[in-house]
Length: 100
Image (tube, rainbow, N blue to C red):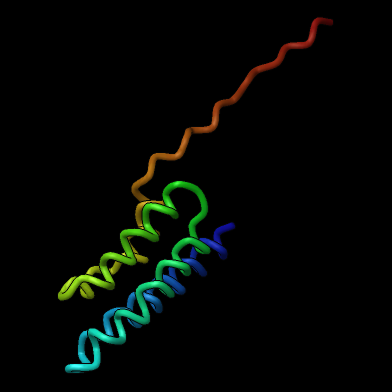
């Protein structure tokens, strides 16, 4: 599980770098964003299942389509939300007594 967690982080950082790299290409960059936005949205949906993944895929799509927002590391922020900030339910120990 821990290895899978960091694999998601590495993929997320790579996808963020790809999305940010289009910003440094003058004139062509915004058109590349039009191609990258649906791909990034699909990748986000594949990486994070459930309602959070669907919301994140919409957010990454909007972030890539809108100008100047390429600097937001959406994939990395989603990883932080999923594995650092989101409160996980604390495991509870149930004591069972056997009648002797």
